[in-house]
Image 1 (cartoon, helix red, strand yellow):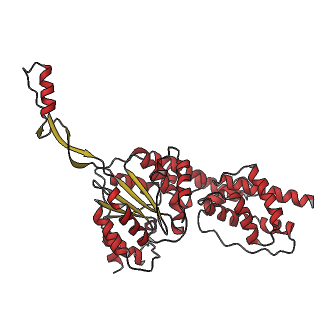
Image 2 (image 1 turned 180 degrees about the vertical axis):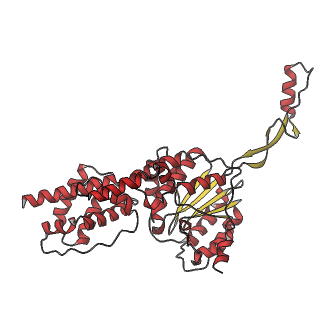
Image 3 (image 1 turned 135 degrees about the vertical axis):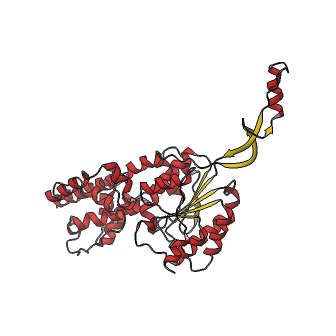
Length: 400
């Protein structure tokens, strides 16, 4: 019995190490708490075992997805679940796990990276694949959903280096300008006094320019969970470089996270976002969220030629038909509405979903956003001289 308890502790320790490698911060205290919880709960089914460990190891909303995939891969691939359950309740039958659907690559590498039981041929394939092209090129083109924990960290650093220089918008205010068309009387008189009034050097005023505000509406529903973290890294980098950036998260409700993303440290910023959002990885109600934004925030943030970034897959779950009215109102309130959709990464993408077909006629640009290359293309398009994407209505004509 003592040997079984030792094996149980050893396997839970290794599982905790794998979770830490996958991005969930865990220490020895969490492992001890997990062992005590197992003894106290007296788990006898797979579901009880899952939720006991979940209650101890998961502290934030965004960690739940990583834990879920780690649990499925770990206990399916290595057969550890049946062994652990047999240690505690020998008659309890094991249940086959379903294949992971999201974040599987990152979790699987974290789980099995340190195992000595991997087949030699698997190691050779991995090495050959890594040395066919440069790591940087692979990282630029790799889908965010397929990145490992280390690659996500590298992508976060690459996103921080992106330089966003928006085209400036002319305002009605005037500023000193050598080539202006209005004489600045005050500056002219002050300059003439320096020469005793003998020389009058005319000073001019010209239109003042400033970069337009950026307003980001980010979908954090379950279908977007593979991309949410890196999109938040992007918004944090943009917010850190520019002051007039307003960020909103929406799933079943709208949440303003502008202040949270102003934290200097990216991890602290993302943690602040997580603590303020109640509908993480839930359903999608685009119409309801846009209605809340148009009613409570549009007049505050959509000023001076604001650019709106709508980041969503367009898979609407609202039963009513308010979406067309709300997206049209949003489009009329901003200077430029850019829709960023991860589904465009698929070559065979067609605008057949009702929500997508409703949104397309009311956006100025329709762009993919699934890897670093597409993110860099977005930055180039927003900057002065950047090329714009094709007509969004062309996607509707393809399925008409």
